[in-house]
Image (cartoon, rainbow, N blue to C red):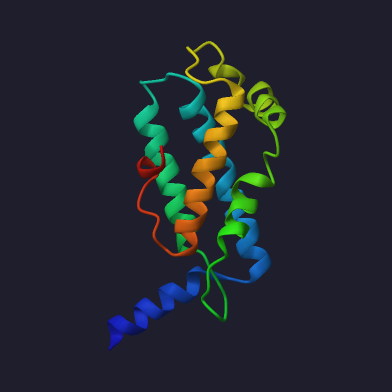
Amino acid sequence: MALIEEIKTLIYEMAFERNKAESRVTELGLPVLHHLIKILKWDDKNNYSKHIYDINNWLFQIQDITIKKKGKRFKPEQYYLFLFNEQIKSVEDITKKINRSLREYKQLPEINSDVRVYQLLTQVYQRISLDLSKDQFEGIEKYL
């Protein structure tokens, strides 16, 4: 019985008030977005595995977040909003993000245009959001 009580305690500790859960998902989602842009925009074989590892770590943490009292997860549309659409609404936003936060990567060979990166991110985040809402995210490799 002690093991069951410990598991319940751990689950409850990962549950947040709704507004705190939203903030935590958004906070963890920003580095995910940056790393996904790096992977989809540039050919960086030296850091690819590390980016994948980091993305998975953050997304697994996001998947563990539930809303207090009900232990529920967000809907797919909400994950999509918190993780992607609040940050990126257009191709221009991708370009701004690159110019402001990812400038050091610009010397690497490009594999996709900003337009293509935006299209790919839209698809990837729709699929990730659905799986996060069902507690079925198993790794970013499935979506790339």
